[in-house]
Length: 125
Image 1 (cartoon, helix red, strand yellow):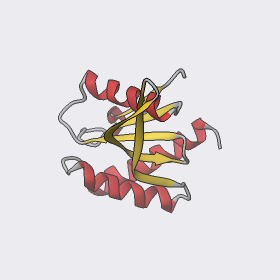
Image 2 (cartoon, rainbow, N blue to C red):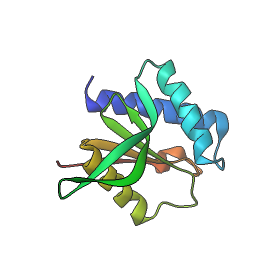
Image 3 (cartoon, rainbow, N blue to C red):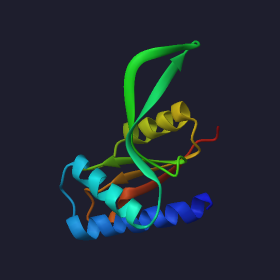
């Protein structure tokens, strides 16, 4: 399955979660609901996936976790904030680089229209 097909399925899951739960809940609630939806449509997904940070050939003992990794290729960074800030986009770009992944979706569930809350971020490796 290519990236466009995967993101189409993921977006469908986002819409389902948003339509059932609405805005204003904690990120952790959306994360668990997304895991249920992703698995329901047959996608392989893991949440709270640890990523290593290597600096100058050495592992840094600081733990970062990806909210959700779908099909070992697309990172989902979930937010439930009043508005996304530039730092949220930079955070996902850094996660993509550290995890050596090409594509991520930044999703803010705290929107009046969930379409406005989904942002596709590419890593040009």
